[in-house]
Image (cartoon, rainbow, N blue to C red; front, side, top):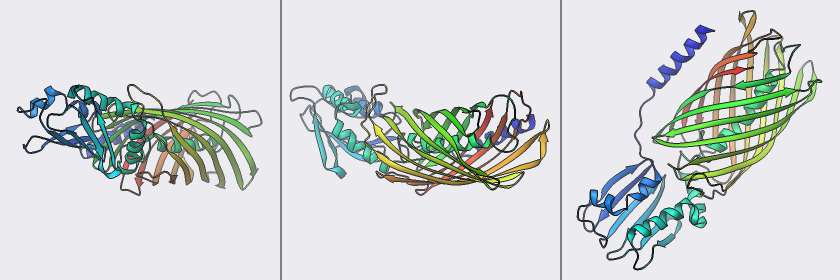
Length: 416
């Protein structure tokens, strides 16, 4: 056990040390004042990107700037090219998204540029629903780092993976020497750390799934709850998410060659980031199936399939309510092989697992619409009836997608 924990820590350190560093700004601008050449500026926070147009901040990079100067900026908002402009002798701010043919004017004639900038910031924070729906559609299509959808660490992706993980974890308790006495309930916690390359960005992910499951006396019906908590660091821009899943697991069929589990599940989650300027609620549900094929007393193959539908809605987190309007059907299909090894810990067998899963997204267009996960883990199932820890595992998952996003997730899990 101590050797395994040490190996996990060493592997994590080697993985972190071997990963290249990135330094890509989440927001960037090319700013011009009068006839001066453009100045480049980068930001990891949307507030900072817009506050650049405060008089004091403009004066720092353009000493000749005044409240009547012509000022123009090509502002890239997470992959969406926009334009900001103060005309000569004007206090009104013109904002446009050329690719969408959208133009807005902020501020009043005779007002101040500071008021115009604040009006624009308020619109981006939630007041202009039309602009935000247009922007969010573009974000999930064009950027690999949106916290809501379109990449492996978005809330929508996390919810999809959590659904099949819950089924796998719950039904594995039915195999390879499940306790014959004592509690039919289990509580699990699985700390995870991941590092990903998503486009030009380096992304660190900290994930903590917490789960509870219970099989009733006949062991043909069970319930499950799980709450994955996630923190994502994208080049210094932070986002957080939380989602909750509730499922009822049925043992639909069983004979010596096959056991079939079916679990209807509902799930709801929220994510927000003041740095990235995003907030959304996702809800939906679907069906997860697990076909278990025992190959022998010490090996089995599971085929896990999932079909769910998720929809987004607006939610205010901090100062932001960004009006995502997405509806996607998600299909996830995978195969998992489990093998009892010849070695044991305190007479409890070591069990190795390898799995491959594919996730397909249909509906509103996303940056990533096909994702693959290759996972491997090793652990032991404690067969002692009154043992405090019933299952312990360490493992890793390699993820790659159709749009060249990739990364590793390391995990260490306990079931009580």
